[in-house]
Image (cartoon, rainbow, N blue to C red; front, side, top):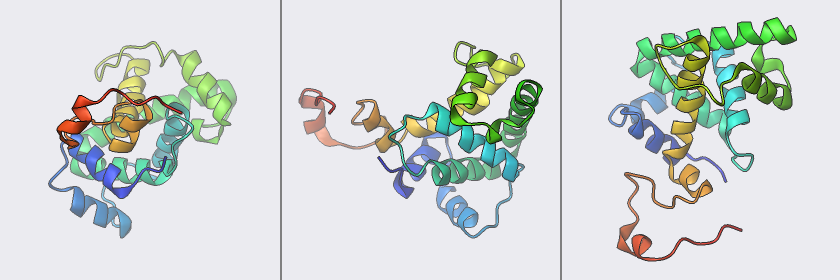
Length: 178
C-alpha cells in the first residue's frame, strides 16, 4: 500500500495542521523548510518509521519527511522536543553499537528499540528519556500513519475518524483480509 499526498494531508489535518497543510506541503517540496529538524533528524525518523510501520507500506520516506517537516514548521516547540528525543536515541544507540540509529540494519534498529524498552514504555512527553522517545518518535509516527485512509485500511479500519465513507460502509460486515 502506497502512502499518497492525500494521506499526508489527512495526517496533517489529524495533527491539527489542516489549514496550513497545503502551504506546508508546497514549501517542503520547494526545499524551503523552516524547521529545527536537520537531515540527520529526518533520516532517523524515517528509520524509526521503517521499523514500526507494517512492511507492506510504500512511500514511507516521503510521507515521514513531509509530515515531520510540515509539523515542525508549524510547531517549532514540538520540533525541539522531537530533536531532543532523537538525540537521546542516537546517544543510546552509539553507546551500544558505535553508530547512530539510522545507520543500523533494520533488525538491529528493532532490537535497539526493544532493548531500550520503547515497546513497553508509557508515552509521556515529560517522562523519562525512553518515554519521550515513545511519545515523540514512535507514537507520533504511528499516529501519522493510522490517521490516514491507507494506514487505517492496513489494520482493518476502513473509515478512520474524519474520513467520509457514507452509511453503506457502516452497515456491512468487515471484509476479510487477504
